[in-house]
Image (cartoon, rainbow, N blue to C red; front, side):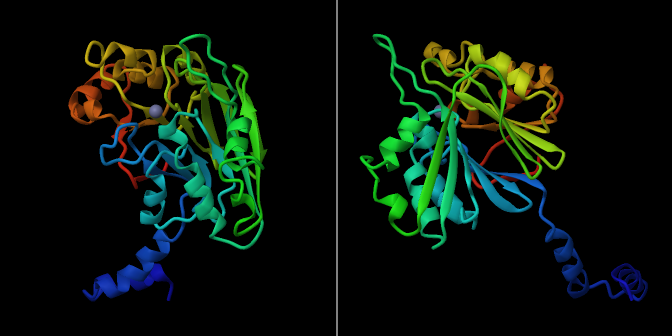
Length: 312
Ligand SMILES: [Zn+2]
């Protein structure tokens, strides 16, 4: 008797009990989503009880792509009962501490998860030598070298537990580009803009679904964001400030307010929005933020929580 007729027979005789239904439901649940996003960190930079900005992208149930590594994401990874054992791609939106501070801890977690060879492909922004009064940032290649290179702070790590090869690439051009295309996975990037911090916006396409990560983006990065996010199933938009004048003026040189988030989501015709990197100001104004976005964008809007899982 096939499962369908077994079910209907059980209904007929009034024996539709939990014991019968659960294995069938479990079998359905066992099929992983082809593309899934797990929020490892929905906050930062302040210590407000949320981990700093970080996401994992799962392909067919396997965590393959780490997008940023904010402080606290190490603990959230364990709480989510996920492993980086098959994670081989790291996308860094920019090199502020609240987005990359946990990278050594996560790489060590990966190192002790296996004895086999480990290969990480790390993509991130090119460097920036600041003029007077401006901050300077290393390139992603230099950043990785400063951490894990021969003279790096954690030079021991690549040979500590399992042989680890880290291949870092700088994503420097403002032109949208494909970083990687293999086995149905396509990762694209375009330069973002986060005041003086070089920034990159990423899009992941897999199995007919897609997710775009805005990173921290100010007004100068929105053209690129509109372009790369076009038609994305999900747009993960970092939401730090309220509509003017609700936040300190300096923050508008770094971030985009809800009204703009709604306009970009509408213009790019994305399916839905996930608001991450939530500041206390945004946390305390959910209704206002939703109302502001809704003036332009009619799709679903979700406020991220650490540990949240979403299927784009
Ligand atoms: Zn940030």
